[in-house]
Length: 233
Image (tube, rainbow, N blue to C red; front, side, top):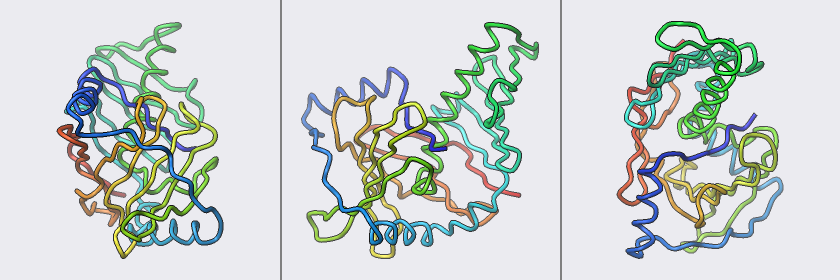
């Protein structure tokens, strides 16, 4: 299931407001795209450039978010992710979240507090894993793909998530190089009041498994560091 972007944090909100006030970014309308075979072909071209098979065969993914405030070790094979932040640690069952285990300072949580912390861990995973693996999710259930003609004459890949996740209806326009490799995307998402903010996807590491994974993302003066990114088996 598509893990939708849900940006949190006061710093990021202030940063976007700063960009707006000083005119460094302007809201753009969601572009119209053409769906069909050609759009799917462009999506497959991007996946091929990224070595999708290496990503599929990667069992473990490690990364962090918000200057290592949130830390993750995801076992894709078992569908379990260790999520750590502050004094909390959750063994998050992505198939059956209610079967997850949660602890604070090493002490297991129960009842309502446990449910609350598990839900928070799932929110963090949904957001932070999207910043790690969004290009690999263009054929997830509930996605629509279309081609957008860009001003420079090239083609962009518009992905709209119509169901599932936290914010269905969010759209991302991937800007690709001539080989289909993603350089950035523009966002039209419910949690940001303006459309078309562009975030970079051009700082990559080739993981031990051979998968391409992003190290950082930038838009304007805002930098999102993914920490010590790893992918291995």
